[in-house]
Length: 91
Image 1 (cartoon, rainbow, N blue to C red):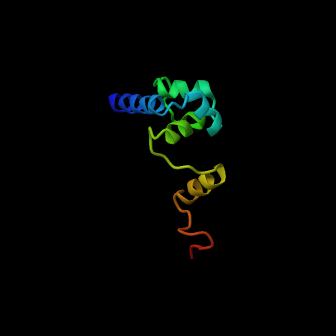
Image 2: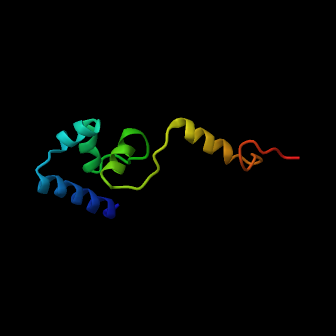
Image 3: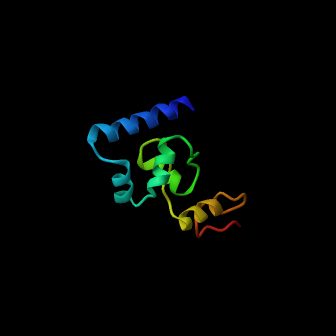
């Protein structure tokens, strides 16, 4: 947890150093300003949804960006007994 707090401190310091407000950055990125502040304050776990996207955009966490369709395809491909590649059939 301390590592993430250090990272959020660094992100907040970068906002202060550049003179760009958190609210302006949030608007430009299409994020909720209140939610960005919650992420920076460590009040969100950032596991899914917009808080996850905010943490990735701020560089606070690594993650994969994919749409629901791609996630569904990957989940189905990982099923036990699923063909290795689409179009292949077991004989």
